[in-house]
Length: 433
Image: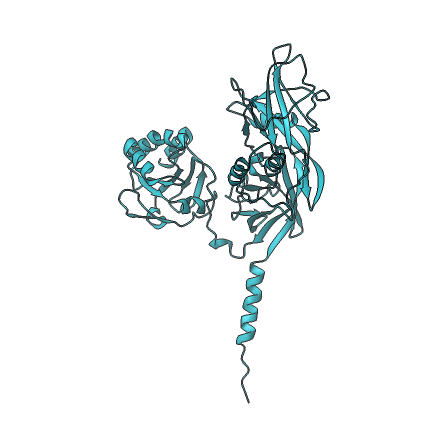
């Protein structure tokens, strides 16, 4: 009698289990107003020059305002420059230059030959009392006679969260047009504008975020997602962060108040998930249940740190995670063009002198920098600790801005993120007792 082979059955079972382990859940997300629990970024807009080739004629500017500056917000830059080009207001050369800057290959199926209202003007001026106010052309008809003046709130550091909320409360809803599936549609967008002391530029963001509910184990967990630091009009698939708004009763060391970036991890109750980012076309957040949470490593507080391997810039000796175990380690992510990073060098040098290398070590991880610039700065500032030039390690750790730091325990866990200055000195003094 011929023996039956169970190999195909085992293979199918393995494939089935593997597919289950890799199952990705797509959670619908919805737009919500305000900043939620996030601290928003701001973008700057210079005053428009009188000879600007992009200038449009405005009407109805209040006669009681003095020292007026005009600011044009291009909501859809691709369409904006395309219609200037086909209207012969800019040259083919200038149009091509802008498309290169936007990293966009013009596709006429995605652009309208008929002009659309894709830019919004705001004006800033001083009223009779000498106070700065701003008005936005909310219906994008270039006429300010029907618009309301608002106080120009000031952005100044340090900024508490209540001040952020006031920026959102002072926002206006502006209308704009876009081409969607070959049809022109109209949408509204919240626009917040603030000033800075002794600065003619204005600063802006779009105070809205995304929310969703994840149902797991009979419980509903609310999440919020921030996109593009509130400066991006659309859902930014490359730059977004997630926080869990519920699950306050968890008993874990993982700090969920720190936003989770794509490919990082979070808990819903006792179940770990991986956040895979967003899909703008579907308007969904993508998450995956982690089958073996004990094996997870991440650049997040409470997790075992990610493994990395690099070479010291000067000595070319290997620097690895394994070598650094058994001591507190500060990973200092920096770039040669980052002023605040360089400002921290004297403090880091003092700390490396103060503590024995067997107990505390700093490792610089340098990204987006030229080797010759790195060499000059190491020499100029007398940096004696290991420096690793590696965009790969920077990207691996999800570093989105400089300066950025991770403080790692002797056991190899991330215990602080973005710690620097006096706070770093205080924490190390406590740990080294």
